[in-house]
Image (cartoon, rainbow, N blue to C red; front, side, top):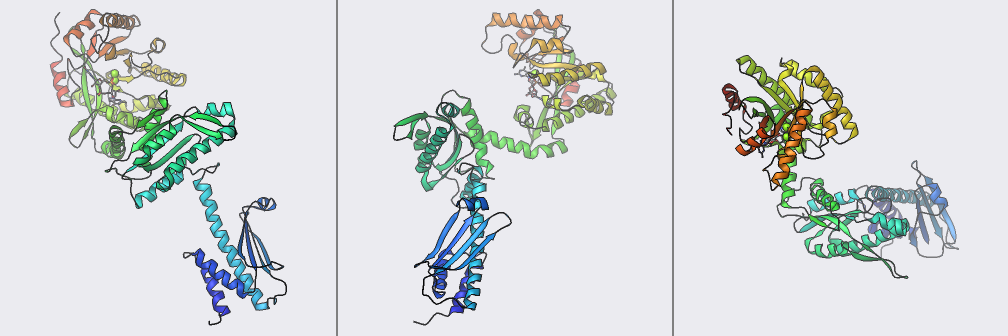
Length: 561
Ligand code: C2E
Ligand code: MG
Ligand code: MG
């Protein structure tokens, strides 16, 4: 066998240690061993501590990189403390009676050890970063780890045949309360390990905080996992045979073959709402993310994506639904209702307004609508039409705007529209804070002569106090209170409707009923002193040109009793 060339082997070793992109641990260790023997060493030990305090407590990582004989004499010792507190140490040993290192060897060994520590710190720091970023305080893999796993799946096997779940352990706070936090933690851990064992290396499970977990795994494991989540006794103390029942509520998404993965959020967006729904149920429940929720989600991102462009290019239109005096058939007003003309079809507001209401986009739309309405009124006035008061819907999100009144007035003034032609529709509110703001607005509007209407009275949290305390002009009774809608008790609803209409009258409010569809219902309004109606019986919300025709005509034939 050729004798080994000391210099050649030594530099090969340094080279292996310092190549940043080419770290091959087994090869490097092999080389280290070779060189250590050439240095006549018997043992090399490296140590890594996150900080000096942990070093003092001996809490770190001690690696005997090389250990082939008695470690009698310490021939080299190095300790470094990095700026970030990390402590690195290394020692090299020889057996007694061995030829000591010469000067050149000493220098080389020093270089070798420092390179080794450098490498060690690099690798350990990476592991620490990993731990801090992808694990929670209790050492469970966390949401970022889940996201990273999803990204890896996307770029390797894809999601076909996989199921994702997000679940919450029911009433875990009770377990914590009754058995104590330590026991609670233990139970969580047992549960997690159970799920992890079922999934094995075929998927991934993480804790997303508290008693919430997310997982992804092949479809065929779903039954087993659901069994493990639903009402299964968890043994938390084997010795004393102590068990506790846990159950979960989960959002489950069986990923369809045509699923479009845009980013990691694509999957979470599917399971999150289902899990929220599941949480609302009383018993442990599994809610499947369905095609419907998938469609809803797609609609949501479509709305968000195209909103800006639609505003800019005037794809939102004001449609006008006449308000009619039931006795004379005359048009006494109109409500402006928003329509989005998207790729040639008309999108009703229920498909986009709730989405825009999730942030303040709705406010921009409402102002756009107000401006549109003012422009139309201005043009009707200029054409000499008999203009009626037009109501505009304002989302409650506007209540956050302290200068709302000024902002509204500015738009109306800009279009030179007299205030008497504008009415603002607002829905009721439940919170005290909102009520305060609502009062300020309604009072302000009344002061400048802009009408206000309580919209949808009778749905949600109707409060007579709210009606009485604020100076509204109009009460709009929701169609659900109209007798003859749905399977109601006719006599009862007739009675209720009558009372509400007369209460409105007594309070000096104009009263209008929405959703009037039949001549019978018009009759009911007449008989109950509700003077105005709005509904399909007269007209659906109309495009502006058609509404102009109605204005010219002035009204409808009165319903004869
Ligand atoms: P809303 O303000 O209560 O408007 C009345 C709704 O009842 C309108 O629905 C109208 O088309 C519908 N309707 C009218 N007559 C009848 C009828 O005889 N039968 C039935 N079944 N329905 C009738 P639309 O246009 O789909 O609007 C729904 C809701 O969307 C509105 O309820 C309003 O809350 C909101 N909305 C519409 N446009 C805007 C807007 O520009 N801004 C804001 N913030 N909300 C708007
Ligand atoms: Mg309305
Ligand atoms: Mg309404």
